[in-house]
Length: 311
Image (cartoon, rainbow, N blue to C red):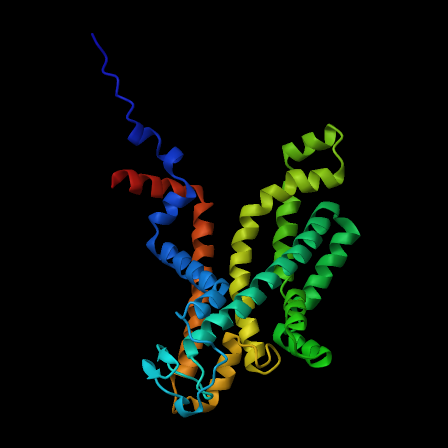
């Protein structure tokens, strides 16, 4: 009596091998659109000077007082203003792109600095424990109990508004969540078998932290950093809107909102397009953070594998 043995079809037995993060992203259209939007904004901000030199973008500093507060699709001697002009006749699209350079730059540098502070203190608190852990966590509790925007306003008012002060203030007020997550994960990892094995082999504390614990924090920290990036952008926009952030003649999306609020009744585009830029960028980072969280969930990956192979 012969026994039928099912054939091993590579299309059915290897979905996990083919199911890379890129494959998951391609099948998640919302996350893919969010990534395309963020990459497009970043590339436009990076190559903004080249766009002006090639004539594809109007110089954001060129003023045309005869063409002040003109609506979108207005054409002047400088060219076609797709998003209209501001109160000085400057091209709004060009100012949005150059403002993205400052807004995104402030967000990225702030996240890097706050991550360094939060991860370092979180690793020390979680690995050392004892009084060191208690001291760092009480510091986190005290700072999180104080209104972050009010603290930032006080510091910037005392130090003076500038890009450097803005970055430092935002970094010093956004590290606590990263430190808490790092500390909690470090506490659980420090009791695992591979860490105990490293200790028994004579590995130093620094080597254990850097080569055994920190790599296992990468995925969790990337998700948290993505969420914090959106919050940092909102904080920068809020401080610039209040006049304590980016100062003229530089442009940021928050500053453009502040400058356009006086004309909101007669020139709606001055606040609508910067507001949309802030909202869409923040939404895109949150969508990518949600996608990254789902990718690290084994149940989600299994469901996506079944869905992809089914289609």
